[in-house]
Each structure stands twice: as structure tokens, then as C-alpha cells.
Image (cartoon, rainbow, N blue to C red; front, side, top):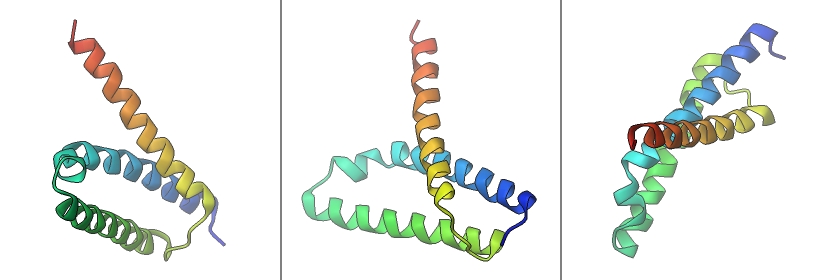
Length: 95
């Protein structure tokens, strides 16, 4: 069982990682979505495996890789937050 401080650190890390994951998708959008079918499959597979392994290696360092459902919710919230902030910033600078 994790204490509260460790849970807050882990939740914060998952939130930041969701933000980071969304950023990587934007950066690698060309390779993830607009390439030939064979290379798209290979790149998506490598991208997914690499990000998953990175997340769990860092999670192992933080809390011995104890996974709770709310960590996945934090990743999704970070992902959504990134896209919301990106939309707000693009709208602001298009004026």
C-alpha cells in the first residue's frame, strides 16, 4: 500500500506523462498517420511499445510499478489537457 505522498507524486507523474505523450503524438504525427501502411504499422508499434516501457520503467523507479486505475485516468486527463491548451494557444495566436 502506498502512502498519500507517494500517491500524489505518482498521480502527478501520470498527469505529466499524459501531457508528454500527447506532445509526442503531435511531433510524430507525420510518421504515425501519413505514411505507407507497412511503415505506419511498424512505427505505431514501436512508438507504443517505447512509450509504454518508458512509463513503466519510470513508474518502477517512483513506486515499484504499483499501478492503480486512477493513474490511467491521470494519463487521459493530461492528454486532454494538452490538446485543450494547444487549441487555446493556437486560437490566441491566430488573431
